[in-house]
Image 1 (spheres, protein in one colour):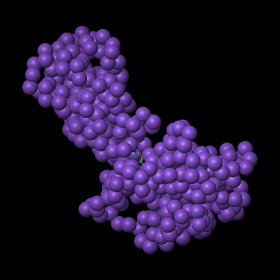
Image 2: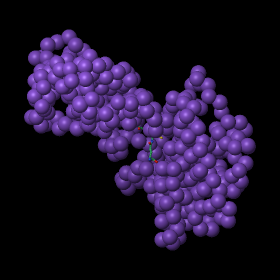
Image 3: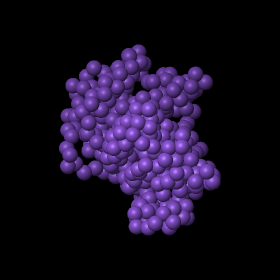
Length: 394
Ligand SMILES: N[C@@H](CCC(=O)N[C@@H](CS)C(=O)NCC(=O)O)C(=O)O
């Protein structure tokens, strides 16, 4: 019989999956008592076991570490919940994917702005409503002739999908909105009214009325935690930054502003943290369209302005080489994380596609040369055009 410790904050719908499965199977799952979200899961001891620092996370009593809520639920489940045949097991995996990739992104895009934990944007919500409609229509027709999602008995597919719909049913789907989906409603009630589910989540109340957007609403830790992982980029980056003391882009900016490059560039390399930050080279893709130098500088300035919210997490030096009607724009960016930062926020996507982006290897000598050139505003572009003007994003 499976047993172990589950790390989670309270009322985490993902942790519910494992807790309900354990109620069915009799697995001994102990919830870590003094877990503090944002602290415990960022501690050295936790990260050693679970390097992503995410919850739910499960430590088996014989010292194995399991993450991903569906996998944890699988581990603590019984054969019935896991599916009796290969086909059933495959279908359960199918529903896991469907819940995580089709339901959760659209449901959170509708719920989180109303809870005030994601920017409120009418268009985004309207799109999310349409997507949720599609998901529920599909589920409704699947459940027309079935009691459960897979086979004739309740499985992990039902638990996982129902838990992923929890917020929609709690906050959004008021009677009128849920009326077209009677088969889904019936199935959802069946799942959450199992004694094993009630033992974990208590009596569940369906939404009487869709919550309304209130800009002054304060949110709970777990709501914020869940939002964080989708679109609350600001929150995510800020909390990550708190835990990373080695290289603070702000400190570098101060040194860069106050000191000569002979001091600030060596400072950059002494403090740069390659594990958590990355360096990128960008080049404007359409140099032939650049005419007047002052217009090109406005182009760079406009991009910086649109990226205002990113300032806390990034630094850049972008340069114009050449003269009127014969120029190019390129630059060096440094930001937290290892992926292109712009697609993480809609506001930031306006300009970046006009540039090509190359990640630079901080250990490469060539990178040292590029950083030196762009931070000290010197040299030429690849076609020999001389440095003309530069702009610093800080
Ligand atoms: N796909 C994972 C998602 C886990 C996840 O994103 N957990 C969030 C809270 S709901 C978390 O721990 N975030 C902490 C962080 O990103 O630092 C699962 O299903 O378990």
